[in-house]
Length: 214
Image (cartoon, rainbow, N blue to C red; front, side):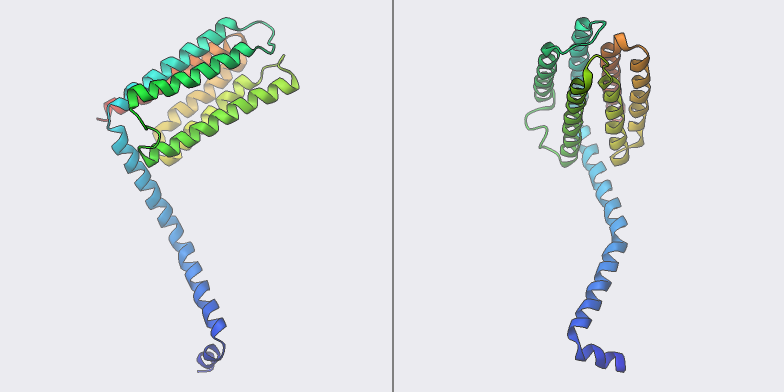
């Protein structure tokens, strides 16, 4: 009775108690809400990947990436130095990737599906960080090109993020990229070719799995 009388006498305290209970209930519901969001995201991606165009688009991007890095490998020198030709190659590759996606995945592919939009944002972040690593390496001394192996660390993070969001199968290319980084560090003169081949295999593997799942 005393508590009820106190609550009536102090309505602000009553409101505070209600808000506290609502906050605790919301915190308890958060894991379930997150699980539901991931389920919806996975279902959304599964519906979109049922389109046969995506497997062709991924293989096309893999070929574009491989071609660009084989050109980089052909330009590689025993002692690294600043060379604007690499920047031009990467820019052309980026344009070619968007053209390939438009040709095979269709117009507005990046906005057609919420799950694809999430992956595109992760990929954009990956590209920004990859360029940032090259810039930092250039500032501290490009004579020791450690940025190449770091690319594989970023690639591992990208595929691992997809694994947590969508399917554990993405851990396969994540581990592949980790091993690719070791190969690139060991055989640095062939790092560009190793990186290009590895990414091409990873994308073609994802495309093959999509075809198998239909």
